[in-house]
Length: 430
Image (tube, rainbow, N blue to C red):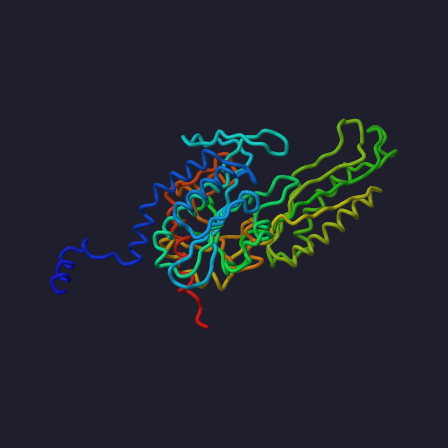
């Protein structure tokens, strides 16, 4: 034994790696494969509920890793893989979304998308303009690493590859709500916590969080104002819904600043579509407004809805018109469970190599929130922006110029692997 110890002291390379060293090595070795997966998925993007190729790639990978269970066709095209560790422990989930957007890519990358798809009855270009290709590749990488080290894994990990985060096509269901409806969070392998990552144009390799509310609740707004059609030269002979709708657009902007408690969080009302009439000399019967609402507090969200309906109906009545208001929830508030965040903070620090930072509120929304309505969850932003470019000049998510610094992908893999390995050990004392 003394001879062996002396040899190990003289030749450190002969020393047996600790479990942590082996995991670090496995993560490093998977980097090029993660990049290759990401580029392949980026070149072949698929719209919401149409992610057949991506789902097949994922399912084949998980089966090759000898997962205990690989389920396909969840919420149309979703894939859920189950990996049981050698040690007893809790069940947790790791989630990646798979769908792309109807955007024409302008990045000029050698693996840029030239794909086409159908959206609302029209042929459209398709691009991974929100980075879901990176999400899938990172979770596939984490699956590879954890499968290699299942002897060190305490408990069970469910790998959730979700379709339709960007929203299912009109007339279809899908996304996280459908994953929940189809039993993802129930049964003997129901997870008790979940982690999701999202690429963001922060400095490459950084991890950004916010305790409590982080991303906004989103509601879709649909207002139809009905008047009475007449000739444009004689508006007094009819009721002008366009004029009433224009007043509504202006008045809505006063609700967040004058009727809500802004100390509870900001709110945004945007009207993005104003439809009415077909000719300049005809006052139409109807005008339609389409928009979005973003809030960060459940109580203020409800008050905003009430004030919005009262404002719209009041303005319509003042113009002898009527108004129908439809407000539909697109996503609840996404955040970070404070207790879970505190529990897993050392893991996130390790994964980020010390770049973990608290971020600002984000008015974008995420259907990851539907999982968090049932179990504690963390939703962390992974920086993939070029730090040499000013933050304001970096292309945002959903831009045709959105790009991912691939050197950041291993940080995401580290966060996913670390969460799975450390969750059981980081459990609070009973």
